[in-house]
Length: 354
Image (cartoon, rainbow, N blue to C red):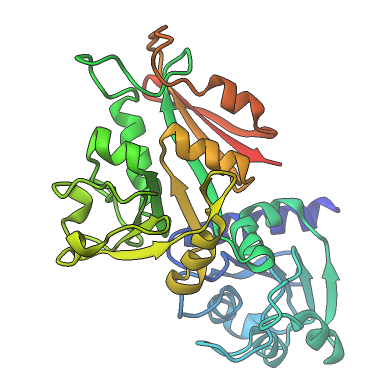
C-alpha cells in the first residue's frame, strides 16, 4: 500500500475508535477527505448510534471543499436508508471523485455502497486493510456468526492464581487495573460471570468511578439456580439475566427484577451458544466481557467461544496448589499477544484467540 494511502487510512482508523462504546451495535467508522494536493479538507467519525455516520460528518466538516476530493473510509459506505440516509449517495451528491475503502461491509442490509458509487462514476478502491478489520472485528464477527465478541478477563498473580488464601487481601490487581476494568465495562453490552463468582465474591457487576458509555447487562450463569437471595446482583440497579439449566424452580425469584433464560446442556455443562445468540437478538449485544470464574472460562474454552483474553497480572505470588490457577488453561488457548502495557504495579496483556 502506498504510504500516502496508509497515512490517511491510519488517520481514519484513529478517528473511528473514538466511537467505541457509543456506536454499537453499529460499527466504528472513520472518514478522511483529501483534496488533489493531498491536503485534508474534512474529517469525521460515527459518534453515536442513530446519529450521522462518519462520511456525513466529514462532508459537513469539508463543506464545498469536498467536491473533487478523495474519501478514505475504514468501512464500505452504506447504501441503505436506516436511522440515517445512505452515505454512498451523500458522497456522490457532494462530488467526491474517489473513495478508498479499508474493509468491505458484510452486512447485507447496508452493503453495496462500493458498487453503487462505481456505477455512478466514482472511482472505488478496496485496500482490504488488516488494521481496519481489527477495529471492526466485533462488528464483523457478529454479522458473520450471530454471536457477540467474547472477551475473557481475569486478574492473576505472577504465578497464575486467580484467588487468594482465606484471610488474605482478596484483591489481586492494583487500583489502576481495577479502574481500567470499570472503564472497559462501560464500553460493553454485558458482563457475564458464573454462579461460583457470585457466591464467593457477591459482586455488583456495575460500572463505578468511570464514564459509562452504556449500561452493561449483568448475566449470571447458574445451572441449578442456587443464587443467594441476598446477592447484590438482585438489587435491580441494572438489568440482570440469569441463565440456568432445565427443571429449576424459579418461584422463589418471582419478586426480583431479573429475567431468565433456560439453556440446554452439551457435554455435561450448559451450552452457552444459545445465550450468546440471545444477547444479540434481544439486547443487540456486540461486545461482552466474561469475568470468571475458572469453571466458566473452561466451558467457554471447550465450546470455543472466546475471541479475546485480557489478563491482568500482579507482582504478587501465592504458590498454593489448593487454589485455582489459570496457567494450564491459558496455555491451552491458541492465541497471539496483541498488546502489553503496564498499569500501576500490574501488567495488562491482551490476546487475540485464533
